[in-house]
Length: 447
Image 1 (tube, rainbow, N blue to C red):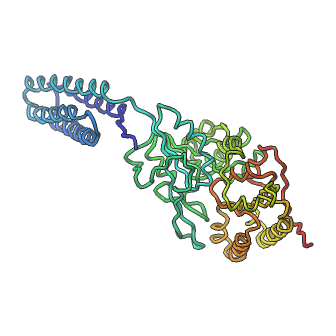
Image 2 (image 1 turned 90 degrees about the vertical axis):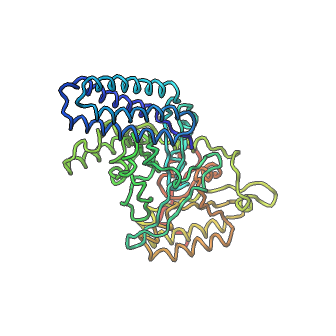
Image 3 (image 1 turned 90 degrees about the horizontal axis):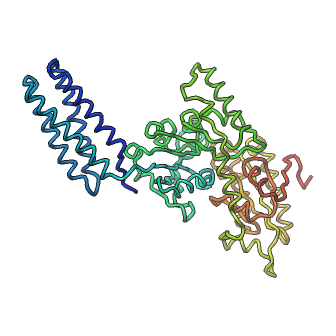
């Protein structure tokens, strides 16, 4: 990690010490000893902290430590000389010179501050909601950008924390990943933190590590920014997505369109009225910005010819003569599963059987929502065994592709058509201009 010199912060601290010294000098003849001793003690404690920080830095900070040592000694002598106005004034002048020397030295020798920007995704499959913003920051010579995937937990049916997951090894090779255990936010205090999980402890299916809840992150950065991990079909967003810990504690909320922004603003302002907390979470009108979604950037920039297609997939896609079958992306959503339950299970079985019969000419690429398994285990355990049996059988038979990879854009770029539920993937697929057919849960081939 790049060493942070925090030049502006250090210069600000030195200016504060200068102001304290000036105030003591202006009232030296009228000063109350107890008050002066308290001010001098605070200045000494600040200088010690600053000296310790200098000693932790590599390079050229030794002369500054020496100046601070002299400064601390003179503060001690000034405290002794409170009743000797002549000696007090001499020390005042000497300290003033020391602080000017220190300020000028830091201003001259320390590198200018770069913005430190941290991206904290939790699921690799949702990285596309942050990637284009990270690329812009990474390309900016005035920024140090870090990608720090954070761990998350499954929720047990009783709400307790289940298995912990960490997907830091699942990101593209071109994304340099920094360990969440090595980057100490409370010490680094990055200028900006980007998140895409807004739920903190409010999600019944998963939760990110509590150390990375929005409320906690907000304490250690100047700017917390939330970008949704999803896009909204038809620019319509459900109200429950709008008021979450992430949208409340973030300084900025970036959404895909003005229509979606309007809903966020209305719901957040409604929350303010109902809880009598106007402006407690910032100015809502200024907080929510319609700047587009990085997910659109990613889907439009991913090209079929650039994909590194897994060998197992090619076995399904290629015909005996080497030509390719038509590839259909089958997308199943959590919302449909939770709403329709057993009927959705039956629909999936029916769809898989139908495409199995057409496998000579069509390759099915089934991509369930990345949180489907966790959601069923936590919220619909009665469906889990049956759903799990379906996925295991589909994978073992190997006539189709089961996509549980981290990159949905690969499936979108590779496929020739879309079939399945409405939702975020459906919205993204519309941008490609390729054929789309929505599934009807009520229609089964067997009927």
